[in-house]
Length: 396
Image (cartoon, rainbow, N blue to C red):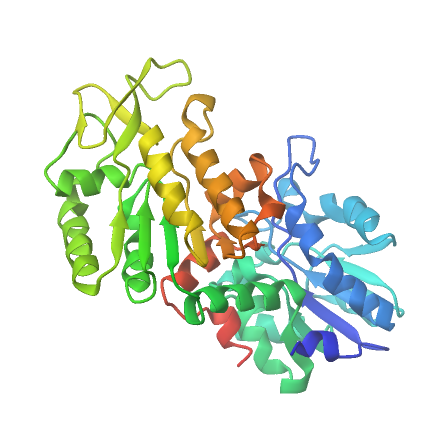
């Protein structure tokens, strides 16, 4: 049941919070427009109904008010191209010009407001600022899952100024929430969570929360070596969070008590330095020689992990298996991406969420071979940690 799809926006001015925080090069050209493309179906539905669209977004982290490099005007031409219609621009998100242009919008019209973060009130969640924004539209649509974990004026505070029937999620937000809830609350077993990345500290809460849900947890990336250290292994000069060794021990004990199988990479691709031109070798992950560091999972780990993944019915993947940005250390992450794609093909529900694993599936060409790729890194992470996201809570 989609409230958005069932709504008719004819004659309505729809104020939409989007996430257009896209990367630009030094000539202000967009280098990755995925976030913009993701919202196009939401915008087209409103325009096709005969509504008009007022778009608001943050962009970068401007420190002291307006700055050329953080202006959303750089996105206007590309957005016009994606929508197939001319997009108007307001040089501020509140004030006279924004009000005038919003009021004058005709059905089918699109207005992009200047960067919300040029006003400190946005990140402070200022109520008066949120109210000014709310006056620009008849209906509020939040389609910015990537910012749902922030209690900002445009993502959480603004919703209170609209009646329940005049506020809703857009299609991106709906599918993000639906996918996340499917994995966390109605997952078919076996449910395997693949957790990678550099630091245990970034993933403690996710692992804790998954111990009540997953049947198997695969751990790869730099964080694995803190676990090997906790088990008394030798990890050479691999990444280690000394202050998290006891935490890793506790997580292993909790998993055992709950009957959750934790899979660590039995072997690693090791290097004598953190560099593209490093000398490489392979080693058991709990017996890495001094002066060497693990930078990817080894061939045996790839094989074991792939078997676990293939037998799963639900898979959550958050974080790479190694330093996949360097060609020598991308094999493990690629092998996992292939296994997740194969499992999807076998009927498993697979969700890839969290910055680096998303970059990896895109880079290796697997994005369309998994069930869902999340656009919201930090938001998805906090959702899987079991936190309530302000941007979602505000709509309830």
